[in-house]
Length: 604
Image (tube, rainbow, N blue to C red; front, top):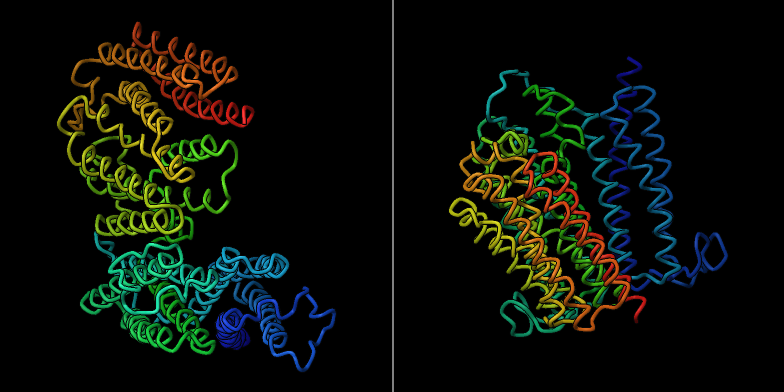
């Protein structure tokens, strides 16, 4: 009886906590839109006092915001303590402890936001943490009430598990909603709310305004359109999906209805000149939509475990995001980002403006990750036939092709829009060209048709440093073309050494990689020739006067090392040497960019 009372009390406490967090989020919007974020210029006190001056409205608005924030900590701490001591369910108390930890980080960030005078990026991060804390609290609240336990479990594992699939689709829509809310915060924080005085288009621009603030504003509208379409599709899908609980559907339906109201409120907000009360209501509705999707997701997660018998370890948080992360091929993306960052630092002669640096790398990660995800979708059948790739998310059954396609399109679109909005048009178009080259020309065409697939297809990787260069300079000049050529000639020896190492996989899958078609020795000889061309190419910046003596000494040593390995591979095309060549080529490219950055920094 005592445990039952504790369980009921915990449910009530968690609902109150979630309500306070939601109110805090909405009040934060009111503080920001009334310009009261610095109403208390010091922290944690206000004008050096516990209670602000009675006649200062801005100070009171900010002080109430801090008071609400302070009340969240004891509520979460008490909830976590009860869940830990009384319920003893890790799935219940872990989200609360995570939320509690984020609250302390949120308080620190709030103080920095005041001290640094509310930079827009920090305000967006502040909101992101608030939404994460709200989501974790709601997950615990739903688990405490366990609404799915009213359904009798059935343990027949089939190829389609409705609740598990619904959980992933809801999560994807929630990711889009999360991005939309952060973009909305960037719109308000940067002053872009006033950049477009008409709706749905912006000052006569049908798609994309010419100025930065107009692009930031339209980015919010375009993401809102995409999220609206996703919510509409998800609502219809769940309404007709056999085996889905009505509770899950009703919460998604509630989110969609609120979203339609939100669209109308956004237009009214614009026409009325963005009054503070409507702005606060706008973000309050966003938090309510986020909460409805969080409840639906947590319900679907619980139903997947209880009704469908999905093992608990497969629905842990790490296993929920891991398939999506793996889909992007993070190892390849990391190498592309190294060349992008290196090109930016070479162009700048040091670290470029920090926001340009962050937005370029974030946009590059999203669009290249989206391209890799699309490659996974297209090559799913090939991956099933290769031992090396059989454990990827689609062939292993952790993701469906439709879900992977959704992730690919979402990441690609967001990456392109981020680059176009916050960096420049040239960088965005070059990133799009790289996406088209990799997905359209290489993945869908050359990979299956010719043994020279990687030679032409490898040009896709050359767009990454060009994106980095143009992000800083805004133009394509000879140095940018050199960086493109560098990747172009580096790719064949790098990839063919790996293909020699994994020749059996490619042969069984029917992919005409060069070692499969001509044999390992011929492939190794061509890899050696390309390494020679690469070595000669790397000398051109010194000859042209773009690089100095430090670069020359370093590049001669790197070329000697790689040429020696390439020669050894040609003379004895064995797997052990191919493995050395493959790993050495990765290190070679990284060290080459480090050399160029150091040389430019010292010379400038």
